[in-house]
Amino acid sequence: MSKKGYWIVILSVTDPQGYQRYRDAIGDAISNFGGRYLVRGGDVTNPEGSDFGRHVVVEFDSYEAALNCYRSEAYQRALVHRRAASTGHFAIVEGA
Image 1 (cartoon, rainbow, N blue to C red):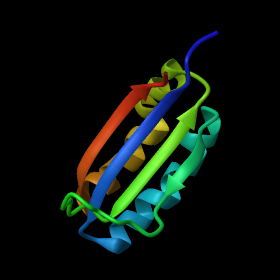
Image 2: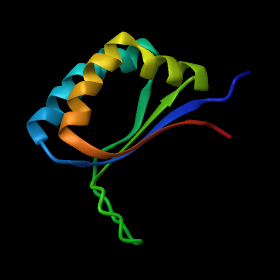
Image 3: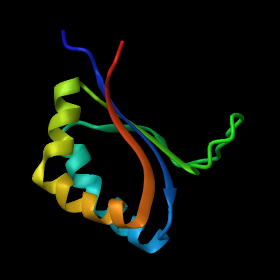
Image 4: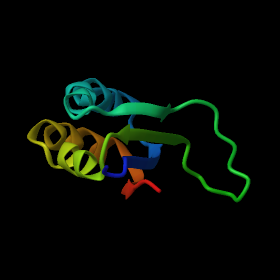
């Protein structure tokens, strides 16, 4: 059995309208690869001083599915909007 895969994303949104275009565009890519949101926005407390205000965690059935979703044509089209509308960190991680 393969280990789950996760997208772990922390961002500062610099253009809310542009970021909304990204959010509108990624739904099919996430669902086509079996992704499930575990964290998507919400209140944040940064006890160690991080200035990132948006946190997202997406779970996939496997690390390979997480990689394939990111590499998919559908996600790559949406990614243009995220990069233009935010700064931050994006990691694809294999679960324990």
